[in-house]
Length: 164
Image (cartoon, rainbow, N blue to C red; front, side, top):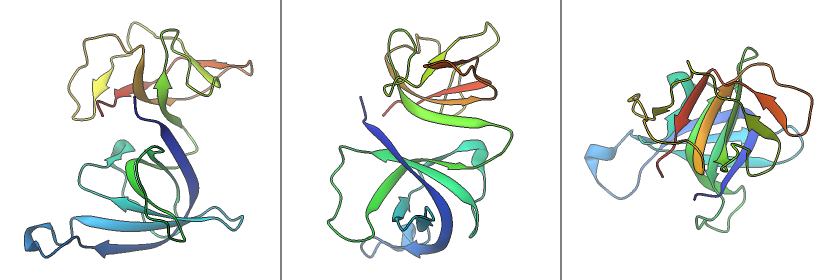
C-alpha cells in the first residue's frame, strides 16, 4: 500500500529537468512548481509514468493537485520536491480523489465511501479493464455529486486502479 499524500496549488513554473547524461531521456522529465496561495510551495517531478487524469495538458496558471508517495524519501530542500504519481488539472465538473480504499470502499482518511454502479467499469492506468476486486487497493476515483454525510458517499463516474 502506497501512502498517497497530495498538494494542491496553482502552477507557477514548468521546466525540463534531466537526470544524468542520457540523451534519450532529455525532455522526458518535467519540474512543475505549484503555490497554494498560502505561502506553501512544492515542486513536482513529473516522469513519463506519472498518470495525468484525462491526459490533461498542464500550463502555468492552472490549478492542480499532485499526489505522491508520503513514505518515499525526498531531499531535504525548500521547496519540497516530490515525485508525482498522479496529477490532476482541476475541472469544475468533476471531483478526483486518489487514495487507499478499504474493504468497505471507504478512503483511508474516512472522508469518502464509494457506491459502485453495475456500469462503473474499473480500469488500469493503461486503460485496460480491471477484473478483480477494487477493495483494499489504491484507486483514483473520478466522481460528481456526493452526499453531505461523513463519510460522503458517491457513485463514481470512473475508477482507475493504481498498481503501485
